[in-house]
Structure formats: structure tokens, C-alpha cells
Image 1: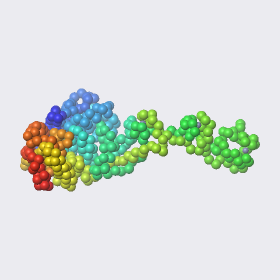
Image 2 (image 1 turned 120 degrees about the horizontal axis):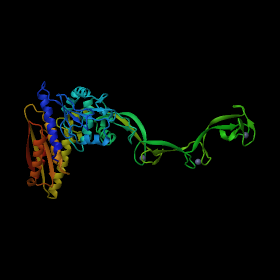
Image 3 (image 1 turned 90 degrees about the vertical axis):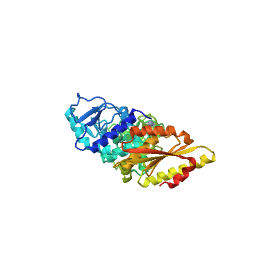
Length: 451
Ligand SMILES: [Zn+2]
Ligand SMILES: [Zn+2]
Ligand SMILES: [Zn+2]
């Protein structure tokens, strides 16, 4: 919980604060180099190269041949996953903010300069904590900082066939975006409808037409011929005799279209069993797992592009997903309301079965000029990190609340110590936190007083 990765967050953040304070004397831009630069060292005092994923940085250089797993690791563990990216080639698609054509130090320095305003926009957003909420918060941060929708595009190399380049390195981006659209943070715009394999769910499937009698795919399409004289209808090859036609039923030769015969349509004949069929059966064969799916039963997957809604922009700027609540807007009512209901239940159960329960209220004080909301979001994240399964954490006006079932007031100290360590390591300078321990019998009173 308390590792180098997390202490990196604070550094990144305080770097950001310093930049804001001293306009004009800008510190060098920190460039994270993933792998190695294709040329020697970068000799530019305005740019400082860092090589460790966990160090703070403003812009990242990602080599053109980066593997999917290496980039996923970058997304998962870096302290600035929404940072602008400079790359070569098209491996990252639109996730690369600048793609270098040439590979000289001058081009890289120039790209860094061009991306400085974007780096600033990203830095102005709240930190994106590592863990379960990172993918969602990252999607929001990327969409709001790049000021563009998250678009689906063809990715023949992937199982889904359609993917979301901006979310490179994120697992199951479509599922994530669907969830975020369901809670109103993104608006869908239709893009495509594909069939899916019934075995593995992938969309890399090929339609396979087979004989409805023997299931062979050795089919051929022929004109259907209709001999007027005797009424026989059969595929064209059956009538072929030298250059002309002869009817196999009445044995008469014929020549003139419209006089002797006509062609009422097409038929499909099977070369394996000689059956003549009007419609072949259609199956989808999966290129990934080899499974066959009946076209009638195949699932359909609809792909959309996703555009941030106003609510999505607020969530991105606050760095909090609405189900967690956010101070100062409409969501907090819901979230605090949910918290209240949940804690009331916890208290009632604890009283009935005579089990301990304690609530800790972490009051936050902001120094002059410090934005309260940002400190509150950070504190909320830190407290959440220390919470156990079953604990409930919520933000309220100027404080963060943690309800700890099965915990006596005398057992709270380790939690307070953990939060204290995280706060002093990671909370931005200028904020102070005062914890207050509330025993079970006073929890309901406190909840009533909250707004
Ligand atoms: Zn499959
Ligand atoms: Zn057949
Ligand atoms: Zn005939």
C-alpha cells in the first residue's frame, strides 16, 4: 500500500503546484523515456529525461515497437497515465499525441514543446489513483484533456476487431465505455454492428455457407434453366451438351432463350452430395477459437463512439466517479445518501447482535488559496486505499467519513496511523487533516447532522 509508486504521486503533484506558482521560471519539462531513445542523449536544458516508470514526469516517449503488455504496464503503474505521448509509427494509434516522422533529438525536443500545453491541461486534472478505478478515471481524463470523443476504429489484430485506440493499454475498453455511458458520463454515437462468436465472444468471425443436407461448404452457384417443352427445371450444367443444350428428360435439343427456355433464377448445388438447394445454411467460423456459431443464434455486438457529457466533464475535472460522490454537486447527495442508508443498516445490525462499530470523521483544513475540493478528493482516495472490505467511505462537506464495522474505538489507531502516513506522504502541501473517532452510539446522531 505504501510503496515507491505512491510516494511518486506526491512528487508529481507538488511539481505541478510549483509550476503554477512560478510562471516565467518554468522548471524543465520531464520526459519519461520508455525503453531507449533511438538516438543518443537529448541535450536540451529545458528537458529532463527520466527512465523510471514510477518517477514523476510530464510527457512520455514511447518507442514505435512497444508491446501491448509493456504499454498496459505503463497505464497500470505510472503516476501520470494520461500524460501526452510522443511515439514513432502507428502502434498506439490516436493514443500517441505526436508521432515523430524523423528520429532526431531536435524533433523530440520540438514535440515536447508542442505538447507542453496539453501536459499542463493533464496536470490541472486530479491525480488518477492506481487500482480498480484507474481505467474509468483515465478514460475521462483522456477525453477531457484531448477534447475529443473516444472513437472506435478497425483493429484487425484484436479479437474485438473494433477497438478504441485512445484507451490503448486498458482492458476491455468497450465494456468500460458502456458502463460509463450507462451512468451518463458518455453519450453513444452509433458506429457498427458485428456478429460475435458464440464460444469466445470475439468478433473475428467469417461467414461460412454450407449444404443444408450434408454440411459441406463445397458449393457452387448455377443458373436455373427451365425447359418450356417438358417443364423441367434444373441447374444449367445438367442441360449442357457440347456448345448447346439438350434436355435430360425429354432428350430434345434447344437453343433460343425466351422461345425454348428461360432462366427463372439461381440454384446452389453441392458438389459433395449433389443436392440442389435454394439457400445454404450460414455459420460463423471464429478465427480465434475455431468454433462454429449458427448465424441465427449469433449474438450481435453494437459498437459506438463515446462523447463526454457535461456530467462526464465534471467527473473528469473532479477526478471522482459519480457513484462515489463528489463534494459540491448533485452527486454528493446521492452518494452521501447511500452512505447514510448503508451506515444506518450497519449500526442497526451491530446494535442488534452487539458487535462493535466505529466511524472516523477526517476533517480537512485547506490553507489559504488551496482548492478545498481537490484536497477532499485526494483525502477520500487515500482513506479508501486504507479501507478494508466491508468498510464504507464517503465524502461530505469538508470531511471524509469512514465507517468501520467490527471495529472497536480502541482498534482504530492502526487505521489512523496508516491514513496519517499516506496523508503526510501524498496529500498536497497546504492541507491538514484532523481525525475524530465516533463511537457506535453517536454515529446516527452524527449522520443526521451531516449535509
Ligand atoms: Zn471464438
Ligand atoms: Zn451436400
Ligand atoms: Zn425437356
